[in-house]
Length: 192
Length: 192
DNA sequence: ATAATAATTATTACCTGCTGCTAAATCCTG
DNA sequence: CAGGATTTAGCAGCAGGTAATAATTATTAT
Image (cartoon, rainbow over all chains, first blue to last red; front, top):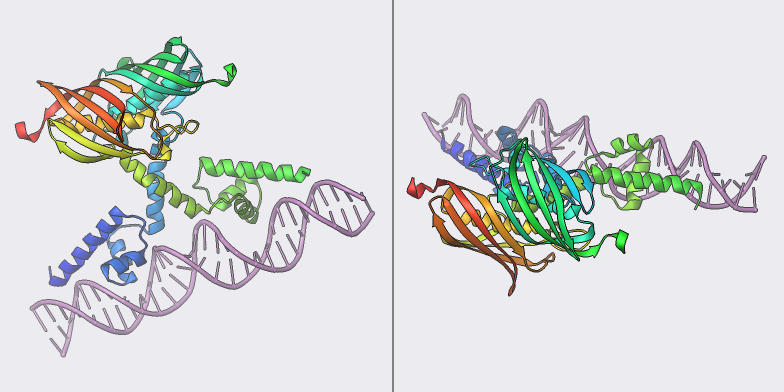
């Protein structure tokens, strides 16, 4: 209400912003940026319910730990349930809110694609395989919380070229189907 | 060389594993799991060059901070450079090591697909759009560190259905091309 | 069996980035 | 100038360590 309150509010907003854009700042860093003392920063955080640096870092780490596993660096997206190299395979993905479009709550296509693509690659009996061509169809939208079953079948194999069909089901409904033409760069140990 | 050395090595391997699968363990937790003392765990970490819990958490957080922005919850994969709704758009993605297959160091297709798909969706003049069909071709492999330019063009628009072509270039070379058939669930504010 | 060596454990001082608390100083407004 | 709001200072204590030293406990070769 008073002039001071406005200044305070502005500073608190600024603090919130700074931490949002960079959660790796110590109270000391923030104090310097806002030109207030460290105790004031702590007071502000307390008032705003913003946790300390280490908590924030931990939150970022935890938030992303599973996500990243599910999409970034793991060798396969989803969980491999069953596989017969060179023939067929099954994998499963539990969809979550973080995979959806905010507006529509529908799971982004690339998560479904990734499930299919990585299964197609896994099912090939080769050390290194790349997708050359993919023809895919999303048949019905998928919402967060669905459990997606992907089934891949190797349809043909001529030399280094493989054709793999992948169908993704949610319960009894097919939500996706795709044909992948893959190229093996290296055959499996078996044949080396 | 000695029997003890083997025990030690096994324990150190086990420690490495445990931390790899769960970097959120304190030395105390680890000590309990290995049934050794806390100082031993510290000694092992020192010998193996594994940093302390807080460092590890920070690394996970930092590693993923940008990635997640680039692939999970952001509305678009890559950075949108230019867009004319309903007509065309350009986005850019810097590829990193974490996007590659470990063995071949080639960028996983789904990152490229995601760049293309999200640009195709962004370029449509609709609030909510979904991919129905995609026909895509990966022309040459992409390695970590490449800067990928994606260009999307809306080729046709009949009712709620759109056809968008996306080409992805690395320098002067086309690495990917795809045709997306999209369906708009809701038209943009403009037409509402 | 025993000295030598490796491996493990204990102990202590110190560090960062805090929390929680109390108290003092400063600012602003009426 | 009183009086509340706001800011700052100062201190004890905490988690999860580092770094260093010393003591204890295997293990092994001889």
